[in-house]
Length: 236
Image (cartoon, rainbow, N blue to C red):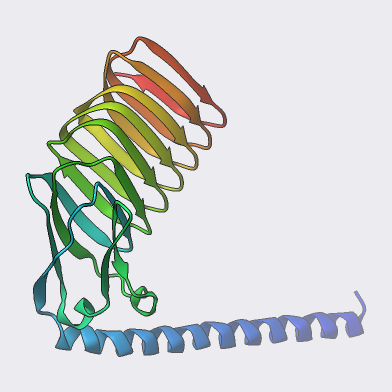
């Protein structure tokens, strides 16, 4: 290699290293600034407060953000929110049609701290979860239940009886209905979704793609799931 080419190569390497150092240093400064800004807020506002929202007449739930939500069956309605004091004013609880929507104002979605909600309602026919929400629902007896989940959300149901279940899941979601009873299930999944459910003698249908898994317990009259990719379907 000519001396001139060697000099050019060395110069180029030095420039690339210099640029990389500047980028890394800038990211460290920005990250530290961001952390300092919000760590101060967290330190000053550690106290959690509780607020009840007067909302009734809903049969479904939609949650977005880092929520931990418990849904219980009851004869009346109750919506209880627990959050840091500095975030409570940004909590959004509203009913649209028959759906109870829970989230945060857009400007506060940068906060990663989990928020808690406890909901009591007589009937449940729809659940939608996105952006990392975790929802657990117990003790419902429903003819039709539609579940839609995306992102890194999770759904868990205990002691429920569901005649017809529809699930649409994508991303890295996890749905656990092992301790509930499902007669018919129509599943549509993609990504690395994981679904576990206990069947009670009906049909298991739908489609699954990506690298997810579907595990079912109990018995089915017919299993006609269409799969593609590295999807795993197992009976336990």
